[in-house]
Length: 401
Image (cartoon, rainbow, N blue to C red; front, side, top):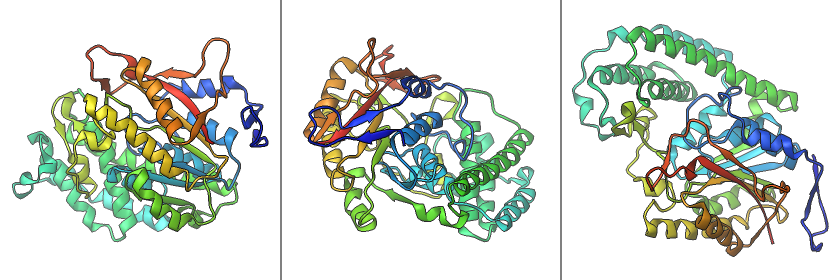
């Protein structure tokens, strides 16, 4: 543990540290392809790099501490916390995020591996037949005709797997493959290319789970104990507080590590863009989940002026409720972007202050007050045309007062 907590009555920051700021700043700006553990299971939008989560967790917590991510998205912080011997709590309003987080952190046995590989051997995408009855499902909206039969065939075959965790793994595998095929601006792949991708991705995913359990075992955490060290809740952070109070009892998160939705920034948490154009809710069909919500539901308000006002109210409400479950000396670490940072950053800080937190300038230097990163390969945009502010994420530190 590389920080100490001073007397809360001190007038200065309660966090003194011997960090090398350079390491955290480098982790924020990490731009290489995501790899390791189970991080490549699904490409969730606006996720921070595992290297960043790892550096924050190592520097601001110790083993067996509880890490909380109220907007867990692709579960980067949850996976890294478990790998580093911490306990983890994640909430998300998107049930797709909870599904992905669950699969990413559920170990498989050798028998599971055998069943999954046998299932893959029997998948045979060339046997996909023309479908008619499923085409009325609104979750399959805008899927190209040359793909729909393959997608339905592969998903229906999941029922052949005997155990729920195997079927969930297979659904996440297909989410990855069909996202690769559909959520891009590139050409369609052949059946042989798709089959090869499925087999390769399955092997990588199994190896990733093995890597996660091996990392936990180095911290003296048994494979069969891993799922008991994380709590994953579907619901808004504010509404999940009551349920968490029932679960946590005497366990208080000492570190909150998260990336909340970005005000005024268009991010498709709940849709794929087919060939970069039309949107589809197909991931919910593949994951066997329901979705009937619009973008504003997942972004705490939407991009209108009214929606942005609602966003800041939700920030205050969420972090106010959070104070009842976190440690009184907890550190809140957030990476957030703004469509209009000149005004919205001030509004965000005001919302946090209203919720009962003060900002800490832990990494301030002579050049900047708050570290930031320019997001590589950004797949979201602000409400104003040609506005590149949304590609800049700002690192914020807070603590309760």
